[in-house]
Image 1 (cartoon, each protein chain N blue to C red):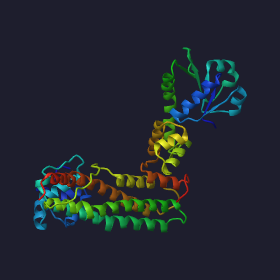
Image 2 (cartoon, rainbow over the protein chains, first blue to last red):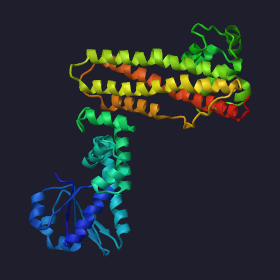
Image 3 (cartoon, rainbow over the protein chains, first blue to last red):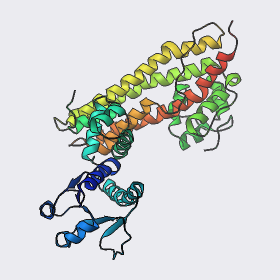
Image 4 (cartoon, rainbow over the protein chains, first blue to last red):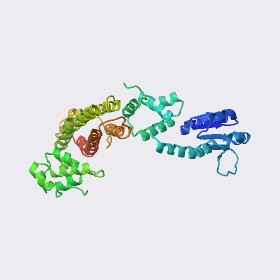
Length: 178
Length: 229
């Protein structure tokens, strides 16, 4: 099941949001261009859309088991069945998304200590000897995001030394034993 | 527990803090101490009671910072104690962990590669600790003794004055690997024995790092500021 799907009228806005989710929240989102592909995606954890797209595709949007988030620049009344994020600036959007995705991440951390795919990517580069800047360049993410991933890896695994991480990676088949 | 002084009974110290038995062993004090005080036992063994009390208080209490280091006791005393501590790691604790680890692997399901990799990681930790012991023996301790005898010597390069170090970090990682990530079938009792042996080493290193950082290094700094002959 996909974690998060973005279905928006503006391809540019959808692309920007996908980048924001990946950089800030380690969420890998899938952009769908039309209702048919949304239906093909099936039930997802989170569906993010905008007011225009939502209004034009209500039949595809509801009812859904996934959490539905509507991004809008207007203040809209909400009965609580869907999440409406009204924002004017990117910072405001980031703060409001953080409240939603941080909670989701916390629940996952409690449920499982396994690493996300992105954390595995970072771990693989850490144990290969890459410094943070090299990891950031190779994965196309910021150094701050690399640091966040490294902090999360240590918190999940209880291992902080590079050699300890190397042996963990070998034990779990993330890298080949030397 | 309250601060230890000349009148504290040795048996009270060991009963409240059993880990101090290894410290006392390094001074030649063994179990069966009766109800003798620190002063009595030190008198019998020819030990400076101020030094023993300072070592025990630093070992037990995180918040304890000893005073009167330079005039309270000698460089010979601290070097002798830390040399015996290193010998305990080298000749008892490290071989003990290794022996139990190898027994654990031999008694576990064949091809449990996890245990083999953990033993490899332990060997890396062991190598690092042995390097520190060699550095103590060949550089730090002779340097400190030389300065205390006011003979000329080379400057010691600065080291990170911190109560934690990478050896402790790696031992913590090894403990996490066993507690969190151990997979496959293995002998439960031997697994516990290995874990206890590693935790025991970790605690001893942590407590003795306080002695290194709060007694040995300040003593070295104080001696370095005195004029050499």
